[in-house]
Length: 150
Image (cartoon, rainbow, N blue to C red; front, side, top):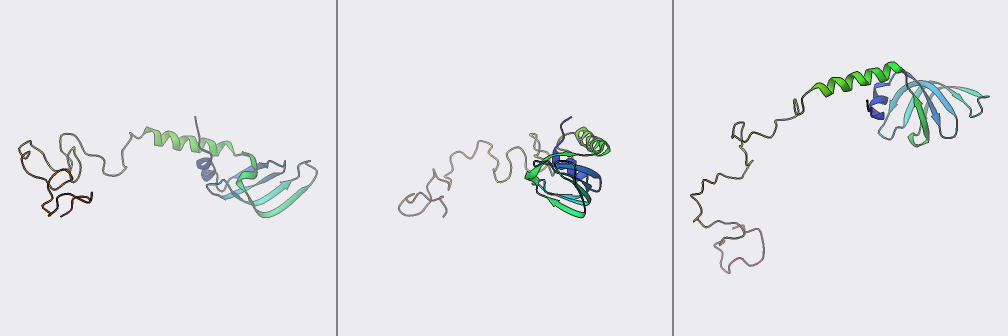
């Protein structure tokens, strides 16, 4: 199943995780927050050097997203995201998303043509309109190339 990394990180808030940076350092801590650039804010952090011989303990740290090589997230978080995705996939498309587009038979508001389209039953063909093709009623004809307002 395909998971988006940001939805995974949003669900992982409050859970422990391991972050390895491109320079080899690792950070173990609890995820506080992440943003759309995958910048990460951790609390109760233990930082390990690239060689693994030095350790630092920090109350919190901020890691820039483009320095991250990989993230290790607990399995329970991954399972939770998969359940949420499966639950949202079961909903038929379009349910609960706005008012919809109407139906061809005219039921449900504006009809098939949409707002401001009028109703053409074929009987109004001989009348002069006020659009671009018709006569605007102004002296000088339709010069100027405007929108035909009167």
